[in-house]
Image (tube, rainbow, N blue to C red; front, side, top):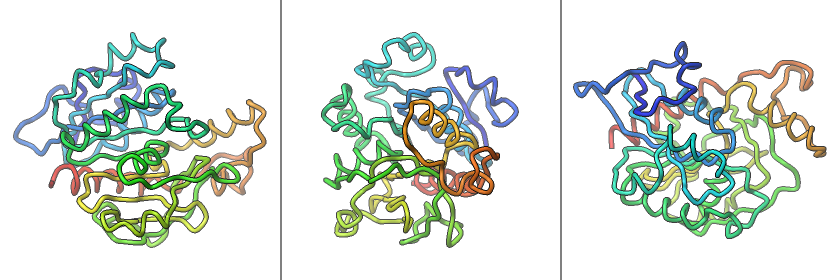
Length: 291
């Protein structure tokens, strides 16, 4: 129905023709309060992608962006955070209907080597008591699975990058309306250990790929959702990541099933946008609003 930002992000101006923003919440209509803990270095790209994903025709979404004060590498962004975001300290006593924790380019590090890991653990603990349903994306899904359930990750022989065909293992409301086979962007160096997931009675393996492995894992009560992929990515995100890695001198293959004729000189193809919308709309309605 609409997105309400109590702190008007800079990306709001660029999205005004794509997203229905409102100046205040209409208390007579369906509404939810959602927070986004943004751990990505590309702040505005992630803001834009998730705002678009959460914009839907049914529910008003009051949206807060959140940051961790101990994330030392973001010291130069403090002014930006204070203007547009909420610190974790300032929202510790607030309840949210939904929460999204983004990924971060940290797969090369041991979890204990991450400078803000203790505050992140505190944030994860906070979500258990103050949030109805939380989505953990990519690296956050890996650490979240280890933190909450002791499910570990393993290093892949090469980076998984591109559009991979996925299928549903167990039907839940999160994948209601999905096709039998669907594409989702993946961009990571690690994967979750599937055997550790399926032996737990309190977890549901919802979706996977025969090529890229586990995709969606849910807690039985829907309070925690782990997504190893990036349904929220826009058309050119994988392309930007590929060219960034090439410029770093990395020996890396072009994203799979992404460019027309698999040629990086050609334009990428959108093969996941409809399922991205459906995934986030299902989450907002069945897990955040109805619960």
